[in-house]
Image (cartoon, rainbow, N blue to C red; front, side, top):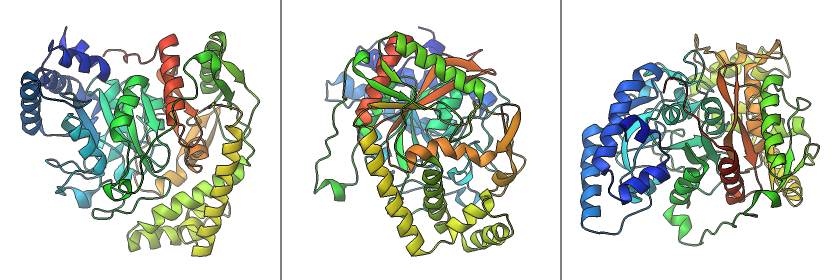
Amino acid sequence: MPSNDTCFLTATEQRALLASRRVSSVELLEQHLAQVKRVNPSCNAIVALDEEGARQKARAADEMLARGERTGPLHGLSMTIKDSFAVTGMTVTCGLEELRDYRPQEDAVAVAKIRAAGAVIFGKTNLPAGAADHQSCNTLFGLTRNPWDLERTVGGSSGGSAAALAAGLTPLELGSDIGGSIRVPAHFCGVYGHKSSYGLISTEGHIPPAPGHIAPKELGVAGPLARSATDLELLFDVLLGTSDLEAAGAELRLPEARHDDLSSFRVAVWNDAEAYPLDQSYAAAIDGLVDDITRLGVKVNRAARPPIDPAASYDVYLQTLFGIIGAGLPPPAREALIAAGERAESGSYPRRVVDAVRQSLPQYFAATEARHQLYRAWRSFFADYDVLVCPITPTVAFPHDVECLDLGAQFTRRLAVNGSTIPYMDNLAWPGLVTVANLPATAIPTGRIVDSVPAGVQLVGPYLGDRTTLRFAQLVERALGGFARPPGF
């Protein structure tokens, strides 16, 4: 098989080639490195390589297989990791100048699980500085371009991850998500991603927070990206589990998928602009997918909504998110942000962000109470429905807008929606609907192209119902098809 074709196989298919010895781990690694050399200059998805370290690991993987030793579920697979996770043998920068030369002494917990499962990690993928944008650009490594349209964003913050998958540079990726950072890039690049239920996968060794901090952040999760829904669950199972300290006192056992056939799923669809902005062309792509699954026998309700106030939910999300972000800002940056926001109009994004950054402890506790009320409301909704289908952002991938890269630039950027423009930070609304309630969501392609780029959708499930959304994604992929190569790849 030509190396380019091998690189576009799913991880499950590549694993089968390795197990049957039709390809060695060394050969698979070299094919991916060759693909990186051919393709990466155009999209700039991979920003660091450990070629010799990876070759050593690949040779060791082949030797283990030759000796008939027991191997892990990712044995011999080549893959990359988002440059916000600590990976020994390479720098971890999170796109920040001050971390240009930072080399961790140990792997992030999730990365250690991936190594223990037998994967050969050979590179790091790009992201926005501080993992804080829906465009993947920073002053260290520059701009990552969408393989579908080089003039459009890959999303963020796991943008290099999704672009690398779409370009055939890696079969699996480890991403993170607090503001849609797995789901948005998957949507923009036409691949699969899974935002796990909060607390299922360790984020220790992830930046932010700063190196050395180990306390998990509220809202933030880690999760897999891949070119198939089956591969998502393959990596999800490897990643599953918290720190050794927590694991000593509890055994983690997730519920199985609620159903194993499409016709048994009860699906709600939220696909209008009444609560949050939504471009009509993107909404039409989602409607097309819903029509497809309806023809397959899925029970669909397009009017069902969770018993929540979407505006209030979004307020709580922004208050919590920017409370977390603000606590991690260096004092000068925090003070500058507050000074700018104090001059902003009430209700504007700058003012809302600043109010969140300087909120009091009682205000933060009030937001925590509001989040717990949201958990209860969503739980009652998912008693009647198994999956909610809804948009990931207001639009598909938009043209690059990276003239300025600081947080303040996100206050002034605009997005084109239905012939008009909306604030750039409205991009957080649809992801935040899910994140604020700690819910799992699987991002899948709709199979539609809008303005030269793919359109994805998120499948939301009940808390700890990760296997339900993953299984539904797998069944839809099996029935309708999934990932498609970008033109020219």
